[in-house]
Amino acid sequence: MSADPLKEPPPKTFRLSVDGWAVAVALVLALLVRLGLIHRVPW
Amino acid sequence: MAQGSIALPQAQAFRLGPKLLQLVPGVLLLAAIGYLGKFVEQAVAAYAKAHHLHVPNIEYVLWAIVFGMVVSNTVGVPAVFQPGVLTYEFWLKAGIVLLGARFLLGDVLRLGGISLTLVVLELAVAFTFMTLLGRWFGLKPKLTSLLAVGSAVCGVSAIIATKGAIDADDDDSSYAVAAILALGAIALFTFPLIGHWLHLGDRAYGMWAGLAVDNTAEATAAGAMYSDAAGKIAVLAKTTRNAMIGFVVLGYALYWSRKGEAQQVEGKAAFLWHKFPKFVLGFLLISLLATVGVFSKPQIGSLANSSRWAFLLTFAGVGLRTNLKELKLQGLRPFAVGAIGEAVIAAVTLGMVLVATRVFNL
Image (cartoon, rainbow over all chains, first blue to last red; front, top):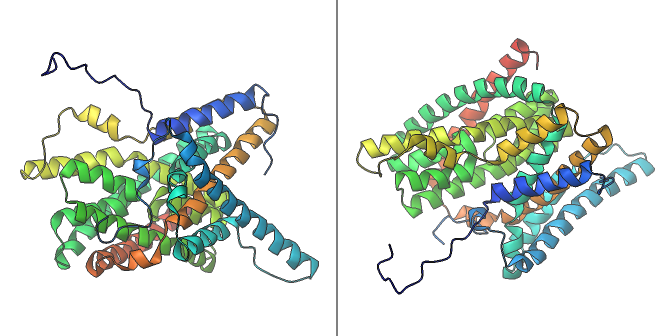
């Protein structure tokens, strides 16, 4: 319990780490490529 | 920042969030410098071909790093660009995850197994030698621990993780980070030269760079400077090294807590999971998907090219964060310990790779 009952507890926030963002973005990109929404990435 | 700090605050501070727009200028700067590197590589090659000149191919990797260093060491990186420039670690990890598409899981397990064997040997050599060197040079024991972790495992990330676990001073971690970054910058330019001088094959060189160069970004760049194939193997070997970070930090945390100079470690399994680099799981997942045939050949090509673009931004970031003036300000003794240690680790790992090349037919 909070020491001050009148004080609202801070809202729970969900933060992704750099690793989490990197994996999430890479997987979304892989999905887009798999679905053909990104047809070709040139180099 | 403390003495011996680097040009930019560490990437651990980077968080994607509501202030996404703040990242745009720096990301554009990374893209511009990286693309300039790619453009110059192609322009030099085209000029040499048109004029029948025999010019050695200088990879875009080197150009991007050099252009980044020119900016960082002349005009500096203005504050408006810094949040975006710090995303280089995000691009690095996203690039590694996407690179998984170029590995069949069987190759990952085979090469990863060889890497793991070599990494365990490398860790034993690195910790023993760095600890002895620290004593000989009269460094503080916790600074020695940080330097040992930085040179043995994974550079800056490992130092930051260990600092918290062993309650080391801010100054100690700043010294260790600065020394490891300076040595990483030196390795970037010396490793490809030594590799060419010794006529190392792509796989042997990539394995060596992945085992011996600190910091994932520098190891990736040192590998990619040699060849595309060497870069691929360097990433795999370095990722195996990164996967050991939890065990190493846990070992040091237990050592210092037994001496009464660090907090007790509650829940070792949770500690290991917390320290484990999660992008390794993403790399394995993409590799698994590629292995079971989820992606067609052109799609794998697209994912591989996406990985290259992500690395392009990373290499520009490596150049932008390397400030020679500030690196010079660090103490001489930590640098000397790091430099001697790195040279010995590089020599020992080179020997191990040459043996492994014969034994495992790399």
